[in-house]
Image (cartoon, rainbow, N blue to C red):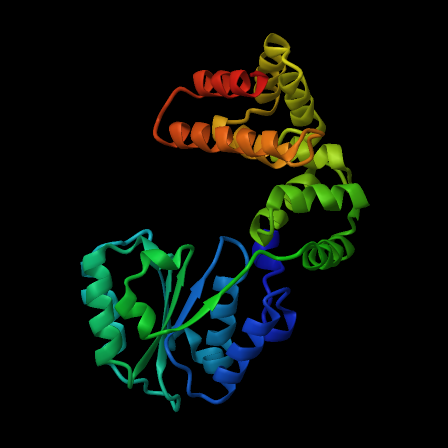
Length: 310
């Protein structure tokens, strides 16, 4: 797996998040780290940075001093009362100032579990530090946030992604064209995990990776296909736009939500006045909400195209 094979092992290997890495590194080097809360989208380095902290603090003793739990698997209060509390209450045998518990996806914890976690963090702060990771910090209760130093991660830039693509392609003997690199970035949207998984899938098919191969492997519609649907819609050709949209969805195996996200991105490049773009994006938001709530995707997509044609 490219994801594990090329996971950074040191602070200096981290791509993007430079300011966060710098501050966290300073905290680790002082051996006086507070509780940490990492917040941001998936695949941008939260888990990687947490594992690097464990490696730097404990080295070979990491297995007994660093507890990693995924809160989305075990969301209830029993996890906090049993696993977390049992690990936190015992002092480390080795010559280290504290142990570390890493709770991934902690925004999946129930409110009761978060309340129990808050009390545990307070009681055992002398023997244990917590690193909490979440996609949405708004789902973490305020008492926990106030006990942590909060770091907000952001998606990686195109330049960061190019460095990663170059490093992997060089070591794996791949040839990635400039257009393929741009397609990889567009599909991954700043998510390194998705980028590396897509790149690995492409490398199985061919050593020379092109833009068409990237879209084919990622099961994503090419921007020009989506733009053609939109061009037909704004010109009022409803039947043609509907047929092309359904054909594109079937050819690439896209769900309704997938195609709406691509439509929303391509609206911004349309050659129409801004007022129309605003109304079209508003329609996308309404359709996406209905799909998430369980509406029939073909009916909603036809209604979306009909709205664009009007």
